[in-house]
Amino acid sequence: MRDTSDTLWLIVEPAPSSEPRVEEILPHLERLGVDPFNARQRLIGRGPALLARGKRSALEKIVGLLNEHRFVNWVVHPPPSRFDPHRLSGLEISSGTIIFACAGKSIVFPRGGRVLAILADLSGEVVEKNLTRLLRQNAYRGAGQIAHFSDQELQEAILRASPVLDLYRLSQDGEVEVAVRAFPGRFDPRGLGEKATYSSAGNLRALLETVREHAGQFVLRTDFGAAALPGCQPKRERGGEADAQRHNLAALSRFGWLMADLQGTPRSVEPPVPTPSPTASLPLVGAISAGGVASASHPAPMSAPPADPLPLPPPRREGEELARSWLCWSSAAFVATTAFPFFIFDTAFLEYGVYTGAIPGLFSVLLLLSGFQFLRWKRLIEDTPTSRVRSLAMGVVEVHGRAVRSYALVSPMTHMACVWYRLRRYRRHRNGWKLTSTLSSGAVPFLLDDGTGRVRIDPRKAFVRGGIRQEGGGTLARSDEKWVEELIYEGTSLYVLGYARPAPRGPSLRERTAEALRALKRDPEAIRKYDLNGDGEICADEWEAARADVEAQVLRAKLEEAAKGRQEDLIVIGKAGSTPFIIAGAECEARLARSYGLAVPPLIGGGIAMAAVSAALLLRTFGIL
Image (cartoon, one colour):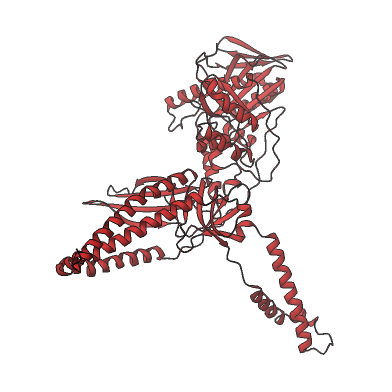
């Protein structure tokens, strides 16, 4: 009996991240009230994921959008509490049936029937290993170069851990008729005949293959614990905890019934045929859903070959940030120890500055300059049109896109792949927390991809907003220390306002020509072909011919490089002059403009008020008032 609750689940079968439909659908989902970050996590990978829940009327628009972008989806009731599969104790195989003995009860699976098999790891070890592998590959290869477990590798890893095999006999309508659960070493393998082995895991593998051979329609799922489905996540067993195993068995039953419901629910659309790619393309946000599905008609994909790792970040200059901090604090200390006591103790000067209106006038100038600067930035954010990377012009530009790493940058404390980080360390003092050190990745460039191309971002001197903020205790576990880490993860949707300029090139044409001529002089064999009269010496005319030939070769090589040049190698966005350089989350653009706009009235109003006070004091000083 199906649950008659009004709350339904919208489950989606994700697509590989290499498909542009993933990025295309996110803005439309956001307009329908679906969080784009969570939606992207559930739309990437291979395991089924819960995208939304609610009443059918509320889900219809999302379903229509998913169908339009050819995402396989199902609207189902949450899996109810049903019976657990019967535990297998033995089996008997004949030409037409497989008879399973389960606690005095015989369960028959006829040849040619419909079978759903769930091969799962009860320890949670395989899911953890898979996630660790994906995190490591994401950190050092990049989000687009992850080689996750294939179904065959995942199946072998499960069999080496704590495997259990659930077999569901389905009707032609996809309803569960009966289910059997097999534990390795807990059933009599003699019924397997020649396939029986001395290995409990080997007997479980033989049972799986036997059922596959007898079934007419066979589906194997190995993504228990990997699919993003509530109530279907295993607890990690530590020390053989019995409560963890009970929880995991209940979660496995829930997962099995839900997968059976999906088998009985017709697909709304058929997914597009993916284009074969020599490398895997599963990003980190899809790592949790990297399970596998294999059937007789849909063989399991194989793992992609390993890709070249990303280069290491450029070396940081030793003491660079320390020198900046020392210069900043020493300058502040100098001002504090010289100017401030002067104003404090020389009361006559202070009174004279206030009496004549000089000090209020200075404050009015500072307030007015700040107010008009904020007003300029607000209008620049609002009025600068969004450019596409493919048609980017030089000058002040505004671009939206997804952050992509150029280097294998990893945050120092949380060890997460990111394009930018800032780490602050604090120590507790009597008056609160005091900043002791700051570490930033500001000099490490990254790329911004908007679907039409990529452009390089130089984050030095940028105002960064919208990153993820994480806190923790000191590395020495001292109660008087803490750290605060701000991150922009790879794959984050960013808004960038900055100055686009040509990227620094390599050696000029003249420098390349001079180097080529020097190389020619050092190579007797190469220069001999320009000795046209064969006297063993290069005269002035022969040298001019050699120079012209070398210049033509260098020019041809430079033109070929320019023709093959990538967008990110030609243009860089960074800081220039007084133009604001802002890197923020895509959703922060309106908030940035609003925050600058709210600061303008008090600053300009205060500046005008201080200017009026200064003018009044000045007029009084000259006896006009």
